[in-house]
Image (cartoon, rainbow, N blue to C red; front, side, top):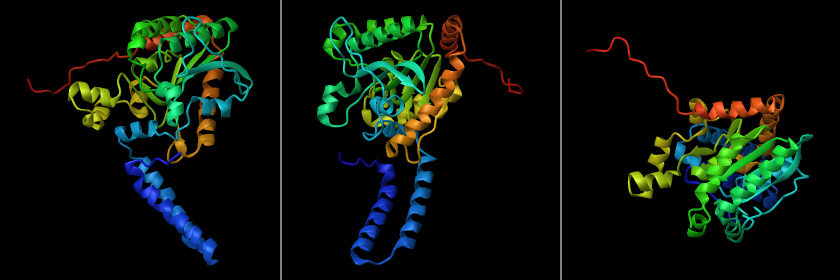
Length: 326
């Protein structure tokens, strides 16, 4: 796969190329350039830290879509090696944009469900570019009901720009499929943890997002609409997507501040796409901590807590400022 370089990553890429050139020069000439390489490595690490500590919302959206970023199956392979994928919604077909099945996570039986993108064009077409269709949500619901019967926790990984809006999807009632998932997830009596690992766009995300805990990766986003969609509606032009990203308050830090996200999962230096193993380890630690807490609760407590959590979204208090001029 061709390496993708984001615009704001140009200084990082430039330093990497200089390091590679020095290493090749040393190998062919026999001249020791260890000190020079070490100095550039230090500068590279500092540059990554500086750039990634001050990202704009739009830049975070770009990182969340990075084609080298780990996807659901990448995390599953590292966290749950005994994962067994189950297919089909028992009504229409098997949606490859959503994968799921039982697995063992750090000694605990779980049901893992997540949206899945592709990297190469052939795989992207196979996965419908990560846009789930009605049968995908119905498959997910079938697996969640199975987990509820087996009394095992449910973990959902969310990475989608939204549900597929095509004619076939509408004919098979995509809105109804998502709505039923929302209703039924509120009735589950097992722990549900939803993790936004990349894109968390629109109803496509919320269809798997009714969790007792909502976790979000540091450079992921979660929003009612993609920035491009918002820009097309408000400004009639997708070029205003960066402005829309600012207005939507979709970053992990802002979502945590608003009480939407319960915890932010840190990413390796330079983003999860630079180190899949470390990203998976950080995600696994966050999941383990949440599962330990949730599994100590009864089914009714889990159900009631999930309901109260979502009922509290969007509640604000207003107060009159003191000392204001009349």
